[in-house]
Length: 459
Ligand code: GLC
Image (cartoon, rainbow, N blue to C red):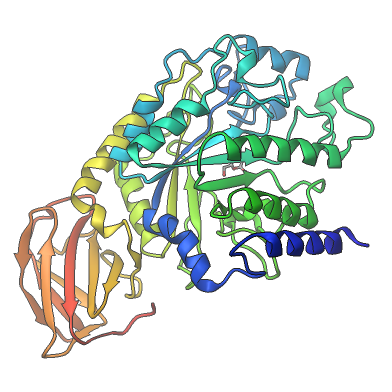
């Protein structure tokens, strides 16, 4: 019997045995499971591991394009890489401070690398010595984060690499691993190891929000293995949300799935934003603040706060989530430029957060001056007009929006908490505004429409 068929039978049996589980998840069950994630819109990615010590340089020489990839890009043999565990000692790590930073920025979830491609584990795993318990620090790094997340009502999520440069049974040899390469790696054994570790992560840290897989692209990982792992995880925590990198459906860095029956709840565009939203399709853009995921001392290529806020808005206006990365140092500090930007984003979110959280893609087509997000409740539609380029003539034209005479329209400028006048123009609605932008990054106008209105855009 094929592995696929065996898995299908196993899955069916497991699902039938689980109370309340039907063979296929209904649309409404899925909506319920995805609800917090869709409302969140904004999360923090944390890439952290022993690679933060070399911070992009090996023996005093920069390794091109490397931070968390330094072992592979620098072709560093295991016997030279593994001693990093003898010096990794993040004594300045303060999980509570990290979570407060994320929360104050308006982020609703944190995805931290429990294990990256180098295989090093941030928790004390019973299944390997290549973990935090073998460092001078010794203490589990995920436990305090889980506690702080619970305390501040932020969802805890783990990024977990399928590819593993340390485990002898991981099925792809690398020339630079030298003698360590196992002549006959056993992917069954490696998969069992992964499952045992994931079980630790799913049973010792409370309910997790997302499991975020990566490193699925090598041939050792197959569609059948992805399906089997997905079934296994969902029997432990049925409410889990899992990204599409658990399976083999992802199309390159654009991150969305090709046609076919692939596992995964959402697409994962990497370092890019979709040109347009896809109705009914969940996606999340993960992006760095500078160029690197892991800490890299010489990477000063920081994006401006304006860019970061506009990315968040652009993504939300297309119905996606923004997973914005920080790469803490080996001491356990989030770099200052990241902190500054997150605090500035938090100031903007404190005023404008309702135009992001719980909103969906805006119905107006590409707007010359900015973007639009939407919230619908009953007979009321709220459109948030995000104005990046403020109209110098004091008249903001909203093309394609027509409101019937009996409909009520209220316009409110969030930065100044002032009501604005609205009139009907030739091509749509016109909002009368002051001539100076109250917020040069993005001034948000909340348009509340009750009654019937027509929107000549695509949803
Ligand atoms: C890539 C990289 C990895 C990073 C990830 C984030 O696939 O391999 O280093 O963690 O993207 O999406």
